Length: 462
Image (cartoon, rainbow, N blue to C red):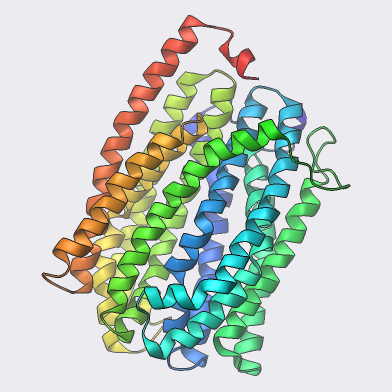
């Protein structure tokens, strides 16, 4: 697999871990920050130049769109883990089959999500209790957005494969190109053509189609024994099963977060359009913290996967420890900046003092505790890298969704305010983090015993 590791890619199965994890994560973090920045441009453009309800229309769809697509994006996690383990085990053929299968699966998933989203968006929004004045705009945004879902899925699957191979730079470059197109299209469609929320959604779809074309072209130019064949996508049953075995629980785990956020969003909607706008803007700021820590989590999955495939369990353990330290440092630093500068940053989205004041209630609670969410993601990433995905999903279901649902139905009605609502976030993060840490310790101990009993286990995995 030397061909994959050449070209200045980060050392994963050799060398110092903390430095390489951070080096590997930087392009992923930059990719996430760019994506968040471009989403902020969407919000800023419609907030400043669109109709009075445009910002609320776009913001109210975020949790619902994430719920619908996260299950299938979890498949891309499974594809990345399968590729990483194949690389660690020096199994070229396994990597090639996984790449082929992943590309085909991404298109199928994209078509399925597009069909559901286009057909049922208005119904879903009504179930969430979206205010009547934003329902039409939100439905329009979601239907156009979901029309581009095959391209979005293909880009995410392709990026996951490249990162599993140790290449985090090219997905960043592709996203940078797509983001620039998105920003320019936003300005053109909203300011010049007055297309409002439809213009923002159309700009996103066009830019994502370009990104999908770039990542597909890149995959076809990899070394011949691992590349995406140009004569069409092929599905291998064994590779598909491995992707599904890891990816379905990972996707369900993401859906747990999204489902709980849909419930939270429904409660936010009950507080009025001003609160919806405030929450949408504050979410964009919080995303800066989450994306940075999620970059460390994605690095953890790749490092754990390759080292697990190579039979280097001591490096899997060290990966989890070093990545946890990195995510806490990043989360604390960014959270402090957001808490101190939140009022000024909110003026990028709105000049309404009431909306800014409401948003700061959420920011003071979530930004200062977001590092717990990062720690939870890192531990889950380490477990997924070793091929354990079902149990972390189950524990997250209980620890995150259970706490938040209980909070919404038991605590929020007593004091219905945005501050009360978002206290559920740190409570769920802290509880789930401790449970997952215990699971990781038990899993590593069990894997060590299996490895000691059979030194040829890495070869057998290959």
